[in-house]
View 1 (spheres, rainbow, N blue to C red):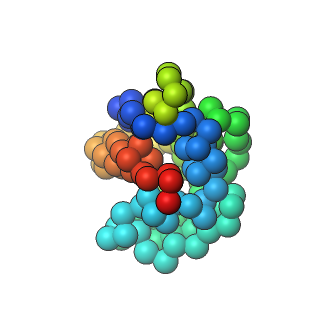
View 2: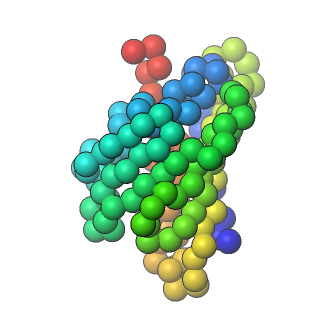
Length: 136
């Protein structure tokens, strides 16, 4: 398995508030780039969407450790299998650190092709989670 990690992001929100939000796919539509993802459908624990240039993909939540970690996996037909998890650590009141990790089954050629876009995606999603206004 190939491992990718985001930079550590800083969010001015409680760990509990962020966890409650990211542990429900119905909240994710506001986090994803609308210009790259189309036909978003979700339930609390699953989502399906189309990615420009790649095709249809799906995710499911496979584990939740309250207020610390949410783990996701591929669901259905996808170009390659992967696991994604979001880790949260509150270091002070309304000061939470966020780190995203993705592990994927990739052959060496596929790794060369997708490494840069995956790293960019992880940091973009981390920035979206950290910068979201949870008080809405």
